Length: 277
Length: 293
Image (cartoon, rainbow over all chains, first blue to last red):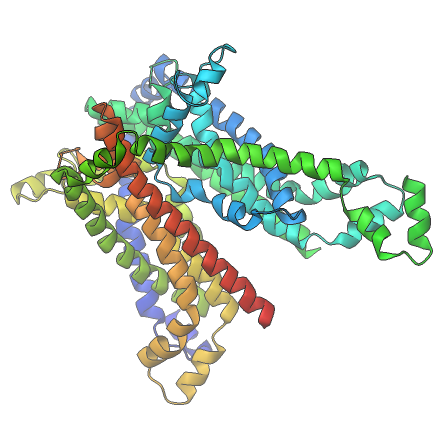
């Protein structure tokens, strides 16, 4: 194998760079990952099922998946609007706002968590206006949703922006010259073109939200069966030294994440094919 | 309306007609801009503002007192130490992986590329859990580590390892597409002219990738200093010993020392804002470079 490559490329360092990368990847990522799978393989099927399908765990899945889904959908809608506004329109402060979109990537999640809790608690800046309307956000499921929306905000915007920039104005002119009004052009021409990127952004935001811990733990109140998300439940199990139970739930979440990663790769291939055509 | 557009376009369309076909009416433009700004205002700007408002709620004296606390200073030191180990380690890995992937063809390349992204798909909490399973008291190396009196979990090495895991892909992800786009013509030229492998790397490759590298380092560093979930699992929360800045924020917050928690949080927020500014500067520089070329 190696000799074959040497003959093709005169560049040195293949063995060194590949060897180091694979060794480092193995030590930092693959060995710990296999530890989790091996821990679970020591459990009987019955033990595994009772660990990952007890009522408290099922409630946590519902909250995690439900809130992540809701946050992903909201981010898809508003992310589309934000990306559209940032690419198509001019207004003062646009560059600053464009940079600010990445804030959830850069801000430590614990900081986001306490800031959102302060805003949405009963006497917080936003919470005190929502309370008379009958909405309580902090320490309820709505709080989980708000935190996950914050965390996922940049994904849809950042995946849509390059696609929107590449979109050719000729297509819209063409649709208009063929008699479509603006609304028809947007629904029939632009949105289908954006669909793969939109779904990729949604999947990325959803995947991130599923694993999120730091921002949710402060605002959710972590009540079992009601506002406890899966990562918090895993930590609770760990603190009770129930390593097997924690690992079994972690494996379920890992498999969900890997499936999402696969889906995202397929979506990206799909959107690249769109762009190539 | 549609017919008017059709007619004007078919007979030597003036530029305004073409523009009208691709532009939204003014009311829609302003409505969308308002919705976007309100959404970002509520979700991004208000959280930023409240961090500083709460941090200074007890005045400047209250703010500075949080930073005179020896536990805060210990947390600052630990956060800096963690980043100082995790970031360079991931830089070396990122450069090596990008060199192998961008410059050579080998079997399993796409698998390697996918595996590099893996840590982004793993919840930070699960990352922490995995290290506990390897190095913890009941883990694979637990008994051996106890015999040799080495502590990894609930100690600094565990924090460094967990941070390295969650920041693992940043540099490699920046460098791989960049080095693939640049190709290896310049390196081949240098080698043909008699440069050694390392000379080629330091004098040709590194100058070519330096902005992408810096960009990756900034993102990697921001995450390394701000990581919470993974570090929280492996740290053990020992005040002044295994507390990083984000964990210190949590401890202060749970002790109802809100102004202290937000003061430390404001420091992390300033770091995040500095990251965003540097990131934007690099992006503008990059796009103006491309425009000039």
